[in-house]
Length: 226
Image (cartoon, rainbow, N blue to C red; front, side):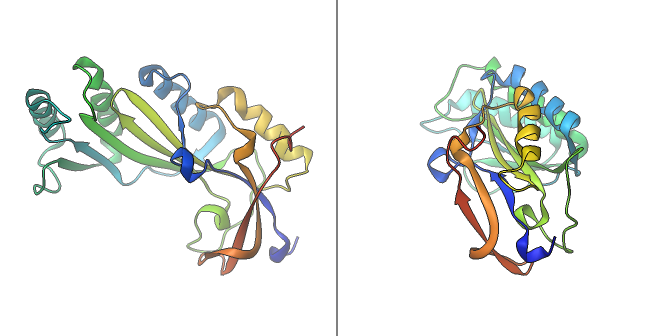
């Protein structure tokens, strides 16, 4: 199939939903193992980069003693903060310490609930689907143009928030894409909403430097999988 005729299916929640979903189950201690199983079972994931940890400083939203305790523990675990300026404290975490950082963020539930935080951990998985058709991307391509999916992770404040951009390299009417989505759906750590699926086709819309062309996203009808 010629490149200009490629058409894929994209799953991405809209801006009105903060581009994401709360985890399923809602308890992050139960949801995080489900995320890991989902990635290991269905994806060929790249090394995780840009792991960012924030401990919110004491103010109206966070109790001083709790903010201090969380920041001091983070410093003991991860060393000196990345940016010592400002009211909050920040660390960039190596992938080798990812699980330790996740456990640290989960430990928010050991303190009385605050208005925000008191910690926030962010990173993303970038991956290709295992056992699913793949079109080789151009060098430097990302996201839609590469056919590479992502799952953003936001952990803290006793919650796990997930921001998926899932790319399925198949035509939206094909049985292949519907069967593959049905296969991964029971294991997914959030609930799919059919109104969040879109067609991705070359055309006026969003410029993709990786593929050297424009991509247009067209919302699919909510009953398209039926």
